Length: 181
Image (tube, rainbow, N blue to C red; front, side):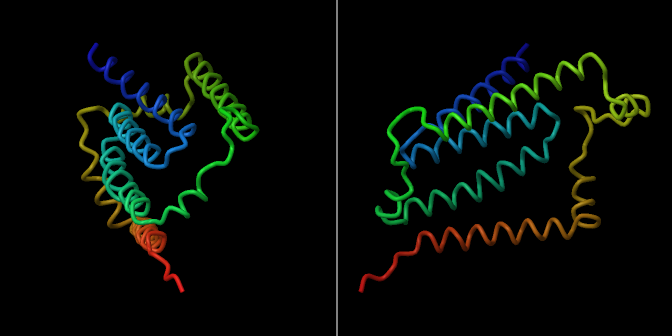
């Protein structure tokens, strides 16, 4: 019972914060809402038994990229922020309608997939159940992921670290004050 309550709390917090995020005009509040969305998604990853992804979500996105965005916002000049703000004052304009149509199409695909999977389980899931290779809540898969990261997936791991370094350099460049001559 408490698990269902927590799941629906995280899901509703993520959905409501994301909807507010795309409709808000204030950049500082938008960054705070992005913080809430990323934390709620980490909570949902825990319910999907992806504990390593949840921890990575918090460390990389909340602890790294989002903090860099906040620093870039705080150190940037007001003219840059005014240029980034949308000029449209209407609640729903043409791009928002396109986003709404895309979101409804995505929701339709998700509902169709859920109905299809609930009636007929895919073959790869049935094979995993037959072999007994389904991840259980009691399994410790972080150690296996660590070995995979440092052996088989070392190149993608290093590419991600370069991406984070590029985000740091980009945030420093955005936050730099230009000399007035």
